[in-house]
Amino acid sequence: MPKLSSQAIEVINRNALVTVALNQGYNAYLPVYDHGIDLILHNEATGDTKLIQLKSRWTIDRKYLGRDIWIAFPDRGEWYVAPHDELVRMGERYTSSQSWARGTYHKGSLSKADREELAPYGFGNPAAINEEAAQEM
Image 1 (cartoon, rainbow, N blue to C red):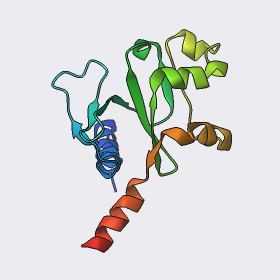
Image 2 (cartoon, helix red, strand yellow; image 1 turned 60 degrees about the horizontal axis):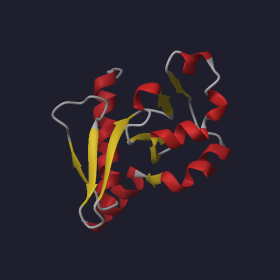
Image 3 (spheres, rainbow, N blue to C red; image 1 turned 180 degrees about the horizontal axis):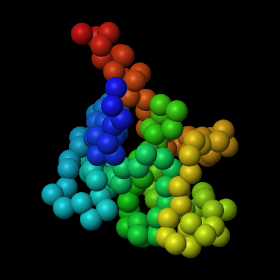
Image 4 (cartoon, helix red, strand yellow; image 1 turned 90 degrees about the vertical axis):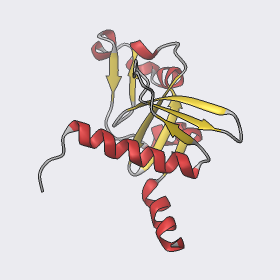
């Protein structure tokens, strides 16, 4: 099987996130012009709207500071959707790194402590949702 391009991976991840968002009562909209926002999630019942930057892992970036952007990323099958500036606060130990000095910081798999801290921002597992939907057919 050929290796997927980064564009293909982004499409797969966006579809996984949309699966989870639909299960949470959100509808997804694609902005005409990106400018740092990959997806807009809106829950009509609650009025909640999230401006989403889709990432393949936990990421903070100076260009998202103060913009009310939410970072959506998967870890071990679970999706998290968290306010970027809250991730910066959670990751204060990383803001002294050379990477952050250049403007961005990301890390691989979350630790157990990270997952516990991010628990309020757990958004769902698309595989579990797909399985449930398949059983209902």
